[in-house]
Image (cartoon, rainbow, N blue to C red):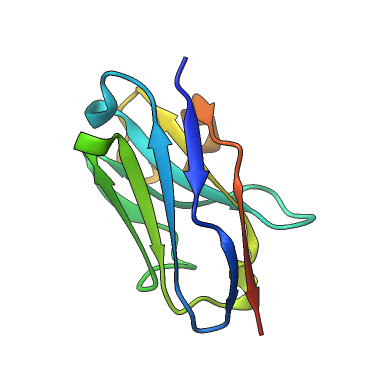
Length: 125
């Protein structure tokens, strides 16, 4: 069983920045695929980004604004969000998979086995 704990959400004005963290248990963190997803009210959970041994991927909607990174020594993955827009408002979830993926294979919610509890990000206009 892998546990994930997100932190760093909050309220920010449009154009501002937030950094989310996701601390993960597990002895083989460095081999995990780590993903970030978000879900706005009334919408389906959507892919934001992922980092795997195959590379780092971000959705077109956040490309150039959001960056994913990881610190294997701390078993933590980060999501740096800049130039935030009101449409970025959502609950953000991190997720983990022990199975390799690359490219669009990492975009699939079904690829991930464990999920965090989510953290709210609200961007005011």
